Image (tube, rainbow, N blue to C red; front, side, top):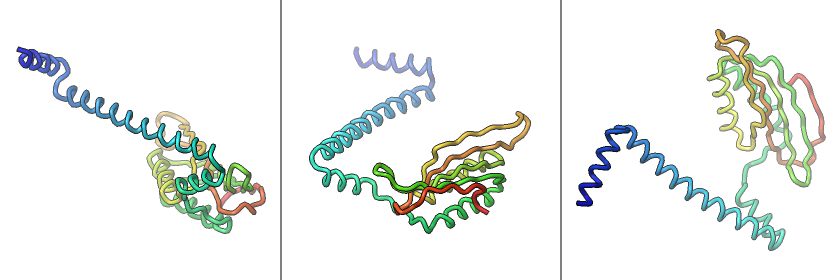
Length: 183
């Protein structure tokens, strides 16, 4: 009797939402389970970091070095990094009307960094491809600002303003600003 009631409930659900709806409900349930498992892992990692930070500074520094082991580039690579950015924009057929960059010295909290603020013009899919290329090629690159504006609804070209930070290996970087960007 109970199995026939279950089949009736399944049949009514199928009648209401269809096969695609049932698959969607199954996927939503699977995503909820996956999210719960990843949240549990996140909380475990967070508690390990807190415990390590409270025990001794040496243990905490070792744990942070093990979890974040990105290859930081030396400041001498800055011209190469800027040239690669410009080359990636040109390969995507984007206009590069303006770019400014600034070198930031290392502090107690942050390593040295190169900040680049630039404007690009072109179709949105090409700008997105450009950003994806940058993020894949430079693991220490962070996209801090990404705003897109279209002049009119009829045009396919957009103007994107990007704020990019690339972390560098040396703390001997002098804070300087150079307008004009890559040439």
